[in-house]
Image (cartoon, rainbow, N blue to C red):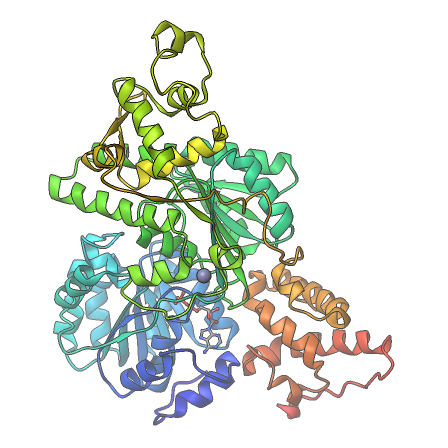
Length: 624
Ligand code: ADP
Ligand code: ZN
């Protein structure tokens, strides 16, 4: 497609003709209008709302090419692929191109034949590239994943620090920087380092209403995962995060053994395997990618139906970023986590060992505490998350585990005092397993040898089951009444707060353990997209899905590049007969109608033959 000079609201027309959407999502329009008119912008918008459109549309409205700085090669390729499928003249320049391919892109750039060019940051600041740009009309600069410029952000990339040179060379070209999550300090840093002092700031609510949040006590994580997948996501694709490479490998193997398409991904795999597995995740219809956090930023797939954490992430920000990869297509999606006491110890140990200075360590401990507060909360999870990011939500969301199945809480003061007393009377030298045995009155050989079967606390907790004691200890550690020694044995000792509680100077409320992992709330057991299709449309939906699969393999692109599930759902519901009808289908722009419209109409017509009111298909190019 060409990029004529069109005055706003030309982008309204492009929204329909290129993307096939009728309306903008929260915040998009104001940003697009501002940048299309030549203004600088700094955008904080959560993953999955639609940041890309905020620079793509203004780039298409303005004369010249939109230059997009993007840190990940895989993501660049996916975005270019998606744009091309929409008929946009997009290309990328990065180290994966052959010299011939790169020259070809450069020539198209110089000839004014590109609407959007994606460039890696290290290339964008080379003298060669800067010189190349001198001869080109530039619509705008977009700096994606802008938090990479800040050392306070979570993915610092030194190359980003040089990007201000773009502003110096091209002071009249509008710039838009975008990020999904950045706290106040990081934001200030971004504005300063990218010299965005004249930029208007846009901030969208971080809420992701279609994501359901749930946290359960960790018991046997792999078995819990398996149960969860069987019950909630038997045919869906998703991500499973584990903290170590070894656990990634074992979990992926375990899933395969139980009939799920588990694929491992971590930094210890060689580059080729990583590339292949990432490719599988992008292209395979049903896949469960098990990964360390090494995997993530480059995910473009919109139909990730669940993100499961088998280990605790490092902070609420990291958790939100990781879970944000679910449900970009707006259909229902799940964020599910299991966590236990051992996780707290692991994260604390990692903070202790990471070589950072004391101030940084303190910040990290505080971040961990916020995350634990989220895990242990008896309130609506979404309210807790949004408050963390400085937003208030008046009502509970109705779409998280604590909303669906309210958590009972109980006055745990006495139980906690018993637990603390067990710690104190055994001289603060033992871990949870030992202490629980003391409380239950299990006279193991070790306990007898130490004479701990004769202390006052021995057996005082026999009325509470073992699992509940474990939960109580976890909550006492998470809430700061007990601290865990980071050595090998995980010895527990009292904090000042713990002593106060033991002396009866404090009381506390504990959460009754959630059983969410064992008894999920009643939700459809079908895959999410399917479950939103009415019964009578399901066979057509399935037929359309097969057609999409065929088109994807013929074109060598992932299925979602042909169209999203939301488009298939709309097709199954509306049952269009003509190319003209296709114009009102969600997510079908002109290029896609021309390329794939006929295939979809055919399958709808075929399906209609078996239905009582069959209608003939009339297809002509002229209909468009
Ligand atoms: P981000 O980079 O912020 O995670 P993307 O730009 O990848 O988000 O967009 C997320 C998804 O939302 C994409 O699949 C995109 O097609 C879709 N999307 C964006 N804007 C709209 C809109 N106005 N209406 C419907 N879908 C949209
Ligand atoms: Zn809620």
